[in-house]
Image (cartoon, rainbow, N blue to C red; front, top):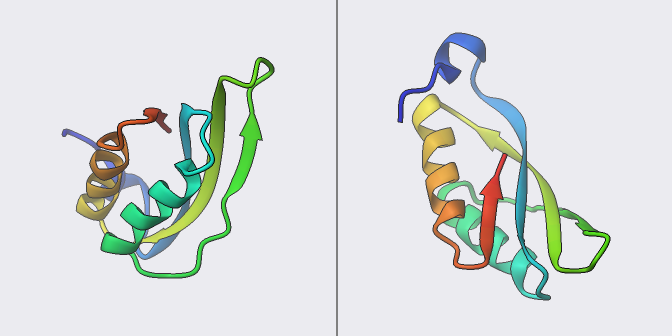
Length: 87
């Protein structure tokens, strides 16, 4: 992954990740479980449901420590089967 996060950000910093996936009750728990593996902490996700109820958008603030840390989180979250996009 060729990113320039290290040129744009000072670490550590808090980033808000928005994860969009299929609407299911366990989606926030799956996201938090993956985040706990790389960045243990207390998370308070905000969940919005799409107009048709098909998708959930989960916003979650995460403290990241490096460019590699951000890239790892993106890859880990995209590996969740129900997830469609990570912003």
